[in-house]
Image 1 (spheres, rainbow, N blue to C red):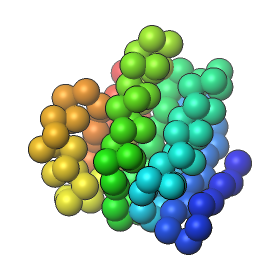
Image 2 (cartoon, one colour):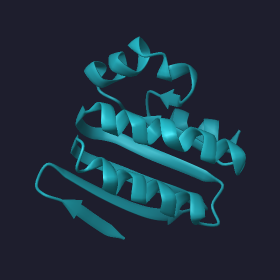
Image 3 (cartoon, rainbow, N blue to C red):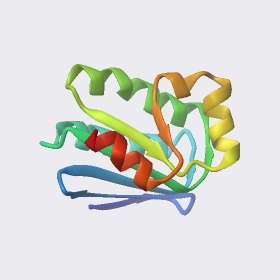
Length: 120
């Protein structure tokens, strides 16, 4: 499953070991946040109960992008789905922290920590 919106962002997703994995490359702005939301919907609709989001190449996130993550927190909780973000750059991580989103969304430093959380 590969998708892209303009040249600002590319999202890829796949299921590996029953974990729905989303990789974000580029910027999440108002227009590309729609694609991110669609990927989350696919992950929530899949048979997987775990969603892993690789933010290694996420260079920018707008309020619309933050809103996508927030709008999916409750859906994941309602369906007993764990989701975790990992490898956020310092600037983006500080935005999540400043807004208190780190208390609502699991954020890990690297993939290993994220997998331990998901499989724990």
